Image 1 (cartoon, rainbow, N blue to C red):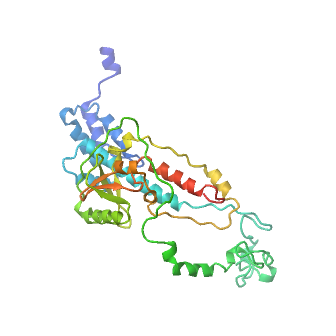
Image 2: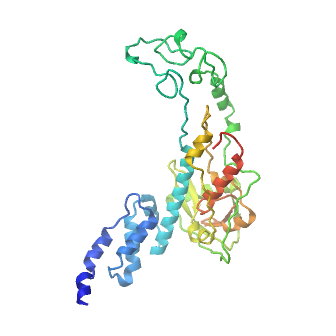
Length: 361
């Protein structure tokens, strides 16, 4: 006992409590790691009967995300378990929304072809540019350091219109196309959310799973009108359907987007996700994707609006995704945000649709 007390002294309670109450969520630290950290720090604090309450208070006060913190502060009878479940659900919803938008905004790196007389890929880089006189923009390449009669590209064939005498960067054939799109915008950019044809999403569950029914959570008064409007909008588009009864019910988490709209996500972490056989779908390496685009000349991207909600669910999966709201129960007819399998199911669906198309990633 003497040696043990000498080499392994018992931590001082006041010191451990000081460390505990000073702990806040660090930059880059996710909610789950923060929860584990404060639990670990509380081991030698001797909080006794008030342990759960103290953990709840430290967790809420130490969160970095003000939106999550504000939501927790509006909850009545909040417990430590309830606070952690709600924070984890909101973090997952924010991450899903961010991944969805960022995947559409990734820049495409074009692999250029080095042309004779150039210092790098692309158009020729003139030497001693500052010492040369300035000319009107060359109609063949757009540069101002030479006459068109001396242009390297005066006999080049355009990769866009396939006419001789200029290159693609100064081609004017696309001007009519730019005028065409606004006149036909309603055909190419319809309002509402699309619908994938011929493919359905299926949620695969573990054996002997049990349905779970959770009551609706109160919605902050500042968001209540927007949440009800979004529910009406989703029902009008056929994304969700009102039902009177369900063995499953998941509370919703409203996420306020940058433009002021509300994105509704089910807190499936407490109901569906623990019972799921979560799908894993591996994305191709970036090197393989760039190799497919190596010969590309013109690049474009498709930004799908609320992509998950464009994939219909099979009948068995619809009931399981039921959400409980202030307006009653709704089942999802499309793949919802917040389900652990949604990212993999959607990526697999996208690859299936685009399979066999050359130059598409």
